[in-house]
Length: 225
Image (cartoon, rainbow, N blue to C red; front, side, top):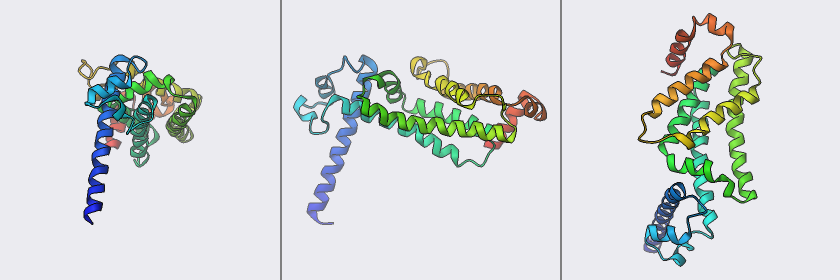
């Protein structure tokens, strides 16, 4: 690599690091003060930049909100990738998706909370981009439910689309009540939510064949290792 190329690479890395610092600061301030009450001057002050300098990295305050929400959604899509590669039953996949979702939310609490609280502040075009990614998540969960229904594990009388909406709504509600230093740890929430989902989905016949509630949950955890 030439000296000029090394210099360009170093400058690019520094620029990317500064942008990440700006995004992190914006996420914290949007979370604490709200998007509308936070100015680009506030964000610039937080990272030690002049207000004009911040526009080297962004075109508008909404750019920051969009990037934050995009990163939040990327975490959800990684959860799909992780669970889709599991060679387990549909109920075990559903249990794993719930647990993974809770952990992903915990790991980047601020950005995920900004997503759910401030999504309405995006322009219509950008809302549609994010909705597309959210639709992929719902379709994946719905496919798990429908596969379980076809195989007899999940109650065939359930409306798969409605069940999906209910589960996603329960998980997304964490943005309004979850506290990182609260009394409920992410593992506890993931396990309880997972159990609620499984026991709400399972067919009566499969539950009976599995030996009841406790045996079913033990079998699912055994599948997941």
